[in-house]
Structure formats: structure tokens, C-alpha cells
Image (cartoon, rainbow, N blue to C red):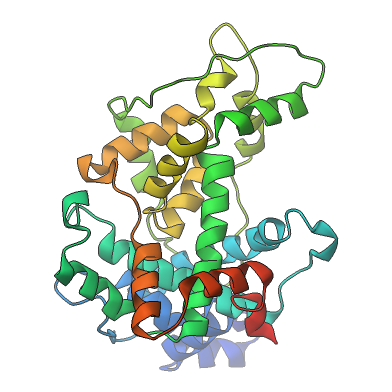
Length: 338
């Protein structure tokens, strides 16, 4: 139940809430709904002046709480996406996540988010990804977590990948398949782009991203649903052929070229991926956003997978076996609820 609404139900609760316990009550409510907030705090307090693996303590404040709630609401959205993606093919097994699985998923989202903020930025261009000191820094963060916890992160990373390759950067084949699904009677042949062009970013779109992705002004403890009512309409428009729009131009290539596009895009953190899913239905919007991140982003694949392999080798464990177990569900988010 919303803590603020509960405090308004009677004078006694209003006095308790307004007293010195106010912040403690709010943080307890945040822990119950968005926890583990210690991991969320690592995300919102991340800065380049401290090594990423050092656990940061921050004094309670409303400003910090608002930021925790913002990342928590994004984590809630990934909770809703996970079952549909995890059981995409064996949909007869699809179910809601248990409370312990949701907790583990949020924790994994926060930790993947922290990794992206720490190591997927202009300080780490493609030419330095294999520098020994950079590899050690990345590995130090992963060594903060147990192997089962790393499996949880790998699990949600694959869900991130699925969203990227099917919704944000769909392949030419995916565009063709979805077009046939929307317009089964059409025999139209599409013109697909061969090369990926990154036009200068429209400043209005960039400004819209940064303004809407800021922290909410009111700490209300209730799950947020996607308020973008135009999202499904825009997704339908993506596949409509008009004098001004060719559906084939929404494709991002096939096979090896598409694989490398997705590897690049996996550097985005879970908040950025979710925002693009909800607000950038067209390829041009995504290209503009990527261009606005800077030259370091292009042709520079994500590093978590490589670092995970390094850490598993240091522990004397097999990363391929871990990934197979995540795929089967014996490790990862689903194993956390057993």
C-alpha cells in the first residue's frame, strides 16, 4: 500500500509519518517494494572518483530516495517483461515470478546497470578494452558477487539482448516476419538498408530523452505502468508502407552485421534500453540517440560477457556451463526462488 496514502487515513498515522521517523518509514517502504535498495544506491551514487567495486554508503535523504525510486520503477518494468521473454517459445510454462524471483531480478538489474555506468562510457573506448588494468577493474566489480548472483545478471542480460534484437534493433528478417504478421495479404517486397548510417542527432529528441529520464519529483510507492499510449500505435506504423515510409528501412541487417549491432547496443544500461523501447519505435530515433552518445559508442561491443568469462576462469569454473544452466533455468533468476 502507498505509504503516503496510508499516512493520510488518520491523525495518528499522519503524526507518526510527520515525525522524525518519516525517512526511515519511507526507506523501509522502498526496500519492500524496490529492494535491495543498497544495490540501487550503488547505481545512483556511481561516480568516476571511486573504483566501481567499492561499496558506497550514502546518508538517507529525500533526494536519494527519489533516485532510488526512479531506478526501482524501471526494474519493475523488467519484472513484467521477463516472463514473456524467458518463456517465449515454451509459453505453456509461462507464469508470474515469485516475490523472491522478483527480488533477485531487481538486484541483477541494478548490478548490470552499475556495470554499464562504470565501464560503458567514453573513458573506455574500443582501443583500451583489453588493457590489463581495465580488465582487472571490471573483474574486481564482478568478484563482489557470488557465481549464482553472476548467473542472475547473465540471465537478465540475455533478456536485455532479446529486447534489443527484437524491438529496438530488429533484423531485416524480423521486420519481414512482423510485416507479414500485420499484413498477411500483402505481397510487397521491401528495400532493406545494406549499410548503417548514423545521421546527426535531432536535438529535440535528445532533449526529450534527458528531460523525461530525470528523477520524479514525488516519492510515491506504487508500481508505474507505461504511460506512453502511443507506443503500440507507433509500433504498428513501423510496419506500414506509405509514400513517406518504407518498412524495410527499419531493419538493422541480418546475421553477422546484426549480431555486432546488438553487441554494440548491449553497452546501454537497463534504463536506457527500457526508455528506447517505450519512446523510440523507429530506427532513425535509435540511430540519433546512439550518435548523440559520442564516437566511443560505435564499433565497440559490450564487455560484460568477456569479463564474466575472465572471472569464471579465475574461479576455476566454466562460463559456457553457467550460460547453459541459465538457459535451462537451473541457474539464474528462476533458480533463486527454489
